[in-house]
Amino acid sequence: MFNLILFGPPGAGKGTQAIKIAGKYGWVHVSTGDILRSEVSQGTPLGLKVKAVMEAGILVSDELLIEIMESVFRKNNTAGGFVLDGFPRTLNQAKELDRMLVKLGTIVSLVLSLDVDEEELVKRLLKRAQEQGRKDDTEEVIKNRLVQYHQHTKPLIEYYESENLLKNVMGVGSIDDIFTSLCESIIS
Ligand code: AMP
Image (cartoon, rainbow, N blue to C red; front, side):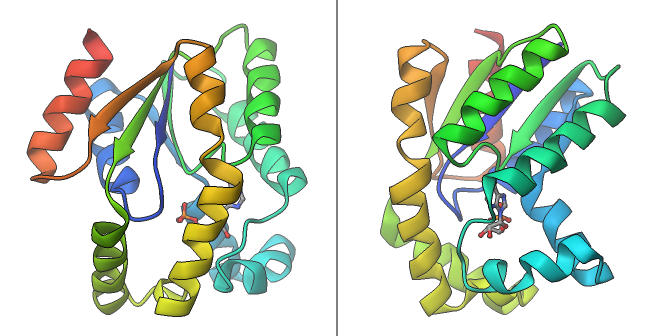
């Protein structure tokens, strides 16, 4: 089982690249943002619980995310691999992920971190707001999401560096060039 974490700030292109990687290698793409958005749009109890938090650009609680991921792993326990996109986002989630993977008899194989500077991120997120109309892509909420990233998610870089699992990939350029760089990092 190959377990890849696609890491990076909001707007780094994780979603786009995760879909391409999952398609190429036959791995299961897990986007916690997509899972949560689908719960919100279906108006499930979970969706109702997280709607306001998501729309404010704040992280949903670790407890709920861990429940979601437990269920994802339970349903896909014969998968050849996973591409995790948007999870883990806190140190606690990262440690829980390690624990869940141990239960499946596996570990995190690799963390690919997409590097994109902040100015470019804001530009991309505002463009996505116009194209997709995501409620959390307004200027105010984008600011919150970047603050959340710096406070809670960025420290994971050190965690995965210390485990020797982290590789950086330039997240600027054409989608295909970035995809090629990611694939090279997966096989090398
Ligand atoms: P994303 O599409 O990955 O940018 O996620 C959209 C929103 O979903 C985030 O701003 C959070 O509110 C929530 N979310 C997604 N993944 C997580 C996670 N791993 N931990 C906490 N909140 C999350």
